Image 1 (cartoon, one colour):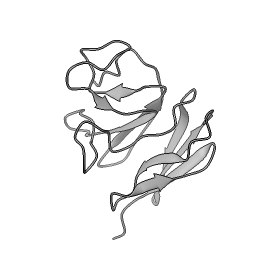
Image 2 (image 1 turned 180 degrees about the horizontal axis):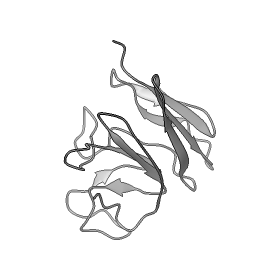
Image 3 (image 1 turned 90 degrees about the vertical axis):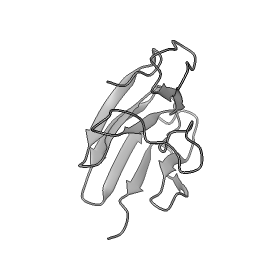
Length: 123
């Protein structure tokens, strides 16, 4: 179980290493806050990737308080699909954000209004 701080989740997808959650949330790992970041909350706007064993959010390689994945919030990530190549994310993207998470090499992934793709690492 992972708490968002009273925000909504609309979609899930999973592969062998990550459970992806998406919606209108602002945080993950936030059982101590409602409509605010509580102690230990991880910033995860629009989506998060969770460890399937612990349920905790994966964090950015450079900042443990920032989730590895994020997506422009709008009304939320409506649908996610895992394929052999990676994760596809569909959303309303009401604010035209191109933020789509983090590539396998740690650089920011970019999409375009309404859809983005996070490829699996090569190999």
